[in-house]
Length: 73
Image 1 (tube, rainbow, N blue to C red):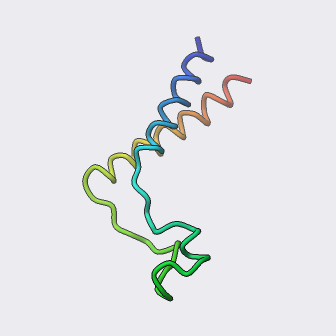
Image 2 (cartoon, helix red, strand yellow):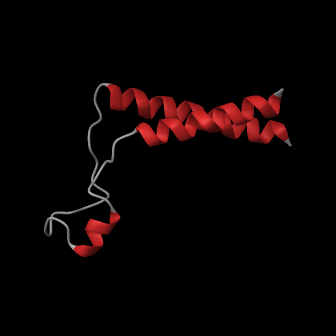
Image 3 (cartoon, rainbow, N blue to C red):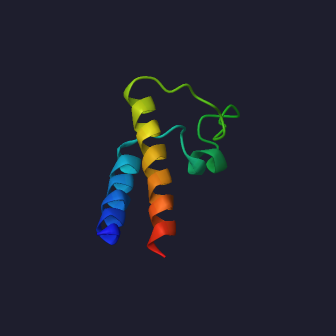
């Protein structure tokens, strides 16, 4: 039972991460030079609306995943 819940949470995390939009141009454009000297992959951006909800849901499911991983042993 606990193992099945563990697998379901893992699948939900994968889906949530894939649905999130990219926060920057990516590491490759930072290395190559992308859009000039202002490219910074560590820049903080404000999330709004659905992006914020997706981030919060991902965080909650990751915490649940860690708890289930500890309990599964």
